Length: 103
Image 1: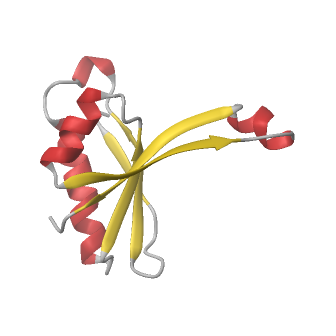
Image 2 (image 1 turned 90 degrees about the vertical axis):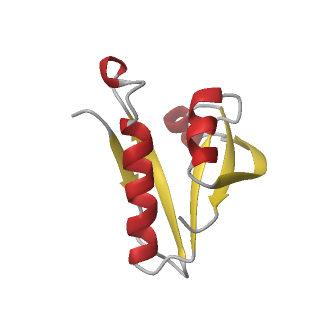
């Protein structure tokens, strides 16, 4: 595997890209960009009018890639989990959502 991106089903016109990953030995070759672009196009082919993904807005590498693909930041979030969910997910998850212009 050189890179992978997950794509959700389209629900009410929206699809989500998640779990974009490129192993360290394959980074800086455009593979992450390629799978994210392909997943974005596939989402639109399946009828999505919007595609969203969540990223750490403090990560310059992923944000540069997403910006070049037409994604733009739309909000900052902090999700707090308590009780059983906190033990599964971790206590604090800090992510930002971005939505692309049509590729």
